[in-house]
Image (cartoon, rainbow, N blue to C red):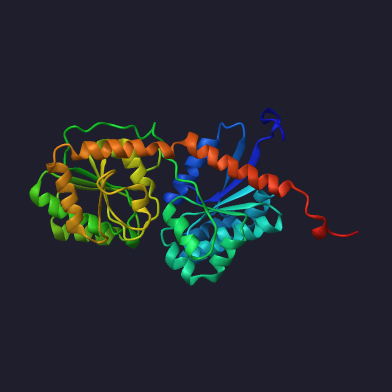
Length: 376
């Protein structure tokens, strides 16, 4: 065995969206890269799935369908240049069409270069995606290791006969500093993007019910997406007051919104292991969430927060009113939620990633069995 002090740093190419695509994958990839930045044992770098095309091709990014073509023209050569330097290729993966455009090419190029692959699948839409896509199932079975961030996804993979390890998301407990809230105010925050699966319309309807009891209640929506105008129209039709559309917020600044809120509300129909809930836990916000996908794996109802059924705006509103009107409930939930964050700290997650990287790199470095070696 090579002594630790004599080991060379492992070169790990992390294939993921850059923060130009502001979403859960990009945020977690950025946190992982920043965490490895000063580490003596891993040299990690980003290989963006959304590279900026060179020269005049850049102008075509503004055109909906041409954007995909020119991005792919830049992405494949980028993979070939960057992955050849890696000891391990760590690929972030979503589902459906994006699986074909980003993870699949990275797997193909890594295989051509003889590099070990860890597929970091992160989509709450996995049950439907894997049921529909033979390409996805075959690809996931072919990689060296699958890693998922939640027990929910591990169980989904198991249903399809696909092995996986669970390594959770990271939360920066220093940046999202815990605050005690002995007196709870009806200041509500949501940080989910404005897409159908996150059902922010349900959040607005829940807020409408709360505001009938607490006229001074406020709601801040951090996010962006295709449903923004529909949500603005719904808010106007409901006559909501004290509602703020904050737009997209850089990951380095979003902690301020948790610090200013007392209650975190999210109402997705589909989810996996949302970093937003962990951020709320770390910040001391009391949490109300639908029980979508993997949420119950990190939020036990009446222990870490309150769970309601999907698309149940009245249940979500009742949860917020319970937090506001039941003495001591929010403080008890917030304290237990903060305690649960210890398992998502970098010092714990780092050990799991480093162990996996080293196992894959060592296996790749072993000579092939004689029976499979090329005869001269």
